[in-house]
Image 1 (cartoon, rainbow, N blue to C red):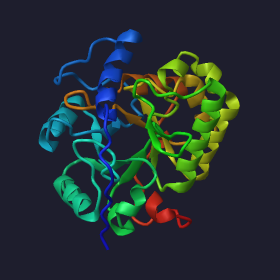
Image 2: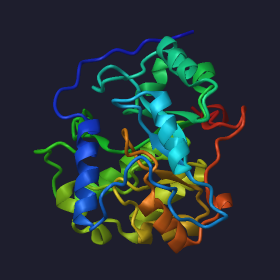
Image 3: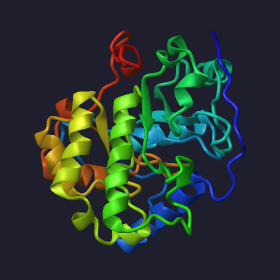
Length: 297
């Protein structure tokens, strides 16, 4: 039976607006070159490495326009739309089986993987497992965070009071673990992202113990880790631990038109790690997707 999740409208800057600005800022800060035009050739890569971007949004565009870029850049796309309660403020938030079914129909027959980016921890009640199983993958991140009262807090918004670094990091790791333990996800995106005050001491804040907790939970539940070209994260130190633990990886641009398929950081890290296609996530067949496999949820 289809369900319908509704909630209060969330005010303030959306994650979408934040990510668009952050991606451009990160490129400038890290000395990355300007984004190339839509006619660019596919990025250089190992001949044994599939070129797939599993974090592509259709903002300000259409599936057909996005597919033009997919063909021009030689990158297969995984399309994601936000999914969860209407409390999550985005131009589009899929919130029930009927909306999800229309979304899937729009992508049907297109040469893309079909996914969603779920929000918060109440999204599962919005959909039947039968409809969720029609997706190729479910992706989420940890950037909407429970404050001390348990209410959702947008970590990317200015003015968020997060306390001292050690206390925040311990709570942040616990939040990662809760997501991985209690949600049937296939991909963990924007991994290791930190709010501005803490990002400047990334290596200090992401201690070996904290990394190992998150990576261990991901390995336990067969969740793949995104190598994000928008945020240039996780850093190599984090990725090395993940590879040693046997995690699968995926590439993600978090791209909005026309910036999807720009995977320079993802490919650079893949080269450093010596990744091959066998190290990359591939959507599971019917019956083995996370939403079907996680009988404990």
